Length: 418
Image (cartoon, rainbow, N blue to C red; front, side, top):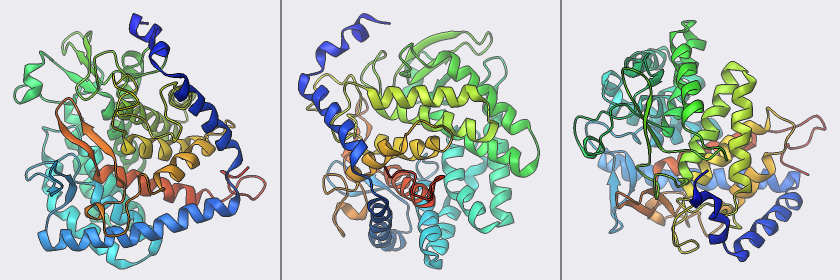
């Protein structure tokens, strides 16, 4: 453990520690069955109304909304390839699942067709993000064989980035752009855990284990090298592509190489929960629980459970929050709760209640029709700071849908109730 980590608590004020206690007490006492139902229904109904306005804007522009610029103007996904392009169609699929309004099915199908050719682009590790969130949800809900074929082809492209010497899928190419200036050889980022779900699902639907074999190897190597003793995660591990040895442990979007980038921690708990879903290997469940406990118990977690963009950011509490990290975490915790006797659902409910407050959820017709405010893309790149993000909305809606489906426990009550 580094000296900075040993003395981290000295940098956290007594007030924030007190806030954690207050939040813990609130978790234990505020979730009746009826309140949980209202939380889901009210916010999913709002999502339908707000995203319908965003859909109207997207249909006029014939582009996929991503975020807002620093000047408050709409920023659409990039032409060519954009790692976020699957989230808006994916949100439409969830709203179709919720409402059964075919408007959402048609919208999802229309906008995902805009990047269908990207399934054959071997230059990006984000194919799981892009295609599983959109075509994957579409196939799950409709059984459309064309969607299945698109997923298969995207998966075949993704596994070309797997290096058996390393045992991982390479995240970024390093021959151009800002990545080429870092001295990396084979960078793997914690975000890449989110691309494994598509591979596991492909083995399930095709019977071909080549996809899950890659996913398991990637998960195992990441588990061995990405995590510190306290279960916080590095953002980037750079490997030697020949020997598989670790060359560097770095960050690109966090505050510092030894800091704890909030969304990275969320990717980790989500990714290993997914690994357990498909493999039922207890080591993945243990890993997911350790990461979840680290997040929940972190002394820098604000009272409202919406983290600062990095737990070690130097100006806490005067640092931007990241609603996207909170939404990803809430969604993961709802699923994780179903695999263990430990209660993670109360924490998820509290996160969702705070995300659904006026502090983070926009008013109807405001926020350029995105649902959530106050997310962060990458502060080191001076990019997407304190803005809405399409993936923040996606995981927020996903979390609400998961909570809505989580109807009962052994006593016939909502699992997030007392």
